[in-house]
Image (cartoon, rainbow, N blue to C red):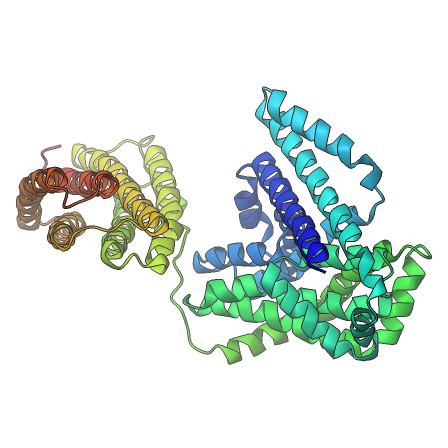
Length: 535
């Protein structure tokens, strides 16, 4: 029995690793097009279904696809209803891999492995290397399926195991529960569907017993988005709740009409091909669930909003003040650009505050918040620069031209401030992952420096907003203090390294944090000098 157990685990490990290789390769081939697709196709719920199907087919995970929609909801690029469309599509997309597994390609496993490995190692072009990675991943995945099938074959001789499996057909709720638990553990519905196919291929489980487990797999796959939303805002919780409720309600409906559903699956599947029947039941369930829920999507979303009441203030990714209709009149367009630059500055400052605040507690939520907001800052910098460039095509008075040039410089400095906040957050994330800690003295010094950096940047952005020269002078003074303190801390830190109080690994991270905090102050100084007319 021990041999069976470890052989099965080895096969499962190969299956999961192969899936990960395939997913990584497909994502690299797609490059950054997924994010663009989210923005273009998420406008209507039907488009969301198509988008969710496509993205989940690439990522091979409805859970990850659902998590991706959360940042889009927070960015104000889609509503919960549109996000729910992606959730439905994501469930359909995850069935693609199961359909591939159902093909009888085990005889060609070595071909996929050899071809994929050769392309991945020998190819010089990235696309070919990634294609090789996809083929290699598929080959490893099928090898895992073959290993699992061979491992579970002897279980047919154990009457107790066979009797337990038979209860899934007699009591579908047990099968539903088993499927849910399996997928919560493995965190991949595709993997658990693969396990079902391996067992069914050895005659261990009939279609009547496999379908309830398959339904449970769909419920269990929600665990990823649920865990991600535990400490998130209401928008994230609503997307996660919609995912769970959608799969749970759909599973209950199909259990009620189980006999009819089995007849339908047998009708659309080849006779005697249990693997294809399971794959088709997986696809049919998710397609039919989407057809059922699409007409009542508005009511379903309202129900989810009732379960998670309250309102979040979303971060608007799109420019709020830039109006192209005003470009013909520079005197009217300039104040709009100025407001957008200040808004971008406040967002960058908030990111700095969150990133510096994460140093002491290494809060994963703060780190994630910084990383989610940084692309928005970059996007705004692009939009503002484009707007100001279009404005420069019109004639301006010398005073307006000076403001125009200043805004361009400020926009660049603010974008750099956002970049340094992101770098700090990533360094803190590395500290979490590698368990890097500082001495109490080091934390106290960082806290003191962080307070000065925040003060300098806050005063600079406020001075830009109000054109307050006194505030700009105050910001310059704080920036000077940052420079002096940063040098002192750096010197103290080197001394602690020499005295073996700090470890070398922590030492490198400390220096990186000091450097990025000083650079935030430097860019704040630049903004203050703009207000003073010294740029």
